[in-house]
Image 1 (cartoon, rainbow, N blue to C red):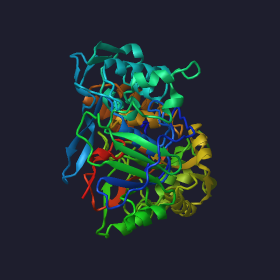
Image 2: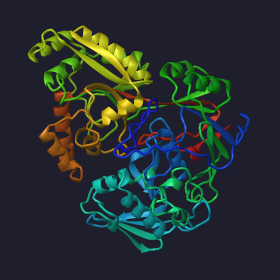
Image 3: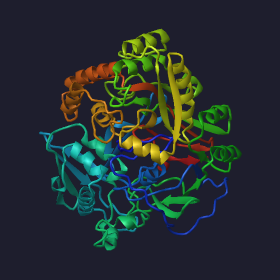
Image 4: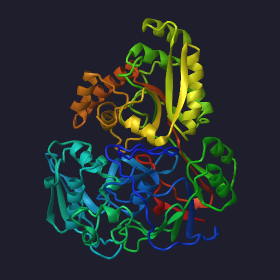
Length: 542
């Protein structure tokens, strides 16, 4: 979800999917003073907002929280790291290796997967990690009925009875229908293996899953490369190496995350050398940094989808010709150049470039005011109409995009009023599918599978925000989510892309590049396109 539906955008808050728990934070541990910039063992990171709910199973849909969890926890499997054509290290979203599990093996019929744990695994407090800890974690996952068990059920592992302990090092998952989704649905923080010895003492009758403790604590249950040393809400949090980590020890001894909400302040601190990395800088600032020899800009293509949604149950967007007319009026190239400053690519399909079976051969839209006017006339609106374009407040890209759309639609007789909505109100109406015409930039599918992606955005009750309803498309999605016939899946993906592009529930805007600015002394960055979270275990300073 990307879920996970971890879904996210580096320049906007994540849209919470299914269940979102936003909890008040409390301090963890002691404060840590900012280290000198010259300290090669310490990395200082400027972030836009604070951590939220730290429970991996019911975590808030917050980018920084999810990234932190990804650095202090491990799961059974992870993405394989490979070198791309440019010599860059990349976390491959489609290939998997063991993490806490030394190996995994599928049965011949594809209905059982067996995980064998590594020898000598320990939690950060020294407790051993065994199959019983894995079983405890998955029982808790299923009992809480959040996003993570839904993803498991989607991959034909519907309940905790399908997860069984074979021996202290071995655990099996029974799969009702052989499929290619399971590993992609498991390689994320929702599957963090927890320490039952630490969690169980915090279980009460009112809190049978120790959520109240886990939402603000990780101590003793971490098993990833780092552990959370301290958290000063609203100010900073600090990661230090986990001495019991099973893998290669991190090179950095301390990572300090400073909460700096103002992007201009983050930029100033990066430029001065007060911080080593700055998140969520506007593309205009990134563009200016490109020529600075003291700064490295990480730029990678993403599978993030950004679009204008048109609600097919809200007039006049229930008319396909209206949706097509708008799609022929939008100035795509201008938006790419002037809003993204060239840091992105045209979105040409409901399946983004970078996902298997993507094609742009059906994308027919380019600015053509005369064609757009003709379609409006055919739709019964020869003089156009008035409408409102809704965006979340504080979304600079949305505001700039909306202005260009407003101008372009005005030329074909559609008078657009731009409505900036408070983020919470926008999200609430989005999740209720009540927005009519809206800017959306909060989605990346963590599982790089076309039918996983199509299911969530065009089929699911939660996230089909445009209320798109085409029974033929829905049936094709349902038939192929668990299908292992590659040829059949490819043909279905092509048919679906052609239909959705033609019926235009979205104005297909762009796929923004992933951008991260850092001091040139920071080395080792490895890009994970599945979730775009930084793995700090790879980083070091020269």
